[in-house]
Image 1 (cartoon, rainbow, N blue to C red):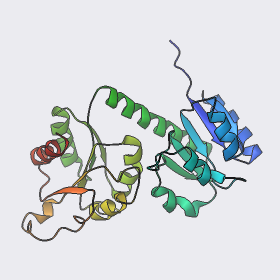
Image 2 (cartoon, rainbow, N blue to C red; image 1 turned 180 degrees about the vertical axis):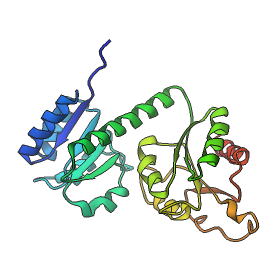
Image 3 (spheres, helix red, strand yellow; image 1 turned 135 degrees about the vertical axis):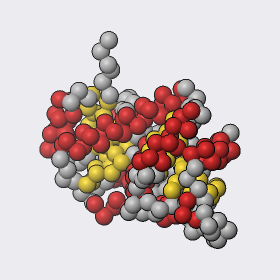
Length: 256
């Protein structure tokens, strides 16, 4: 049986870019719809249900931000997966706090765009499959490969779907698409520590409601000392251990 094509809606006021991206994505076996403004895109959505919207920000009329507001619920969650593609690279920090699935700065290589699109669609499909099977998802942030493997094995044996990242920034990139029911967050991580990640999770609408367990096995001799990061709303529990059994036990207590 031939797999049904995924539909991409391209929203951009640059006509030559729409033409080139439409041809490229069509070659990559996508069904492609186009719109040159937010208003045009809303009219397209009256008749179509795209699997992903690739959205420019600087356009006439309502612009990309106005369009996002029109397609979002009251809590700021878009009804469709959205990849922001814009020349306004300075807006990356703004969209880190908005419930979109990805951000790319123009100009970008077509290969980078297609990789991002496929990653977003794969993440959404994995979430759909896990939800249909009733499986709980846990995002594990652990840079020690051995510990990550052991924790993942214990959690998988308990029936959880586990995805692992190795650094602080990877959590913020992965969580909106994976949509975990729980984040197991190590404090000492490359590039961005867990407590700093927790403070960012608190202000990101797409993931701020996800409970976090913050753990740090270097605190074993100072477990009663104040925890940096524990003041964040998302942090529901702190553990001075990286024991797979204890982490799994804490996860079960929070998720039921």
